[in-house]
Length: 96
Image 1 (cartoon, rainbow, N blue to C red):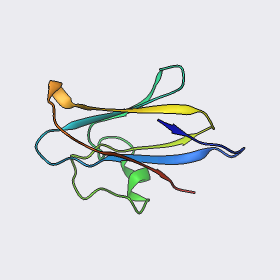
Image 2 (image 1 turned 120 degrees about the horizontal axis):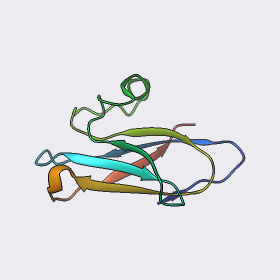
Image 3 (image 1 turned 30 degrees about the vertical axis):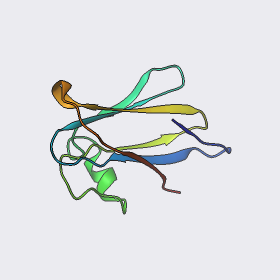
């Protein structure tokens, strides 16, 4: 979960770092639990936006979400695609 403060919306970049053995699904949920964005391959969604950051993944299978978010509580959920399991990491960056 990330929490931002301040009057200006914060742009957040979240990228799991897979070990290459299983595909990942990254979800961003708002404070109510509602799904804001979902991604399971960074080139499928938001490609142009992601390519304009310094955090473009080197592995096409990585999941990435770029979002401009008002200050609030958020939850990032990382799961294996097709019920796969493993170990992964979610990184969150402020792009401002």
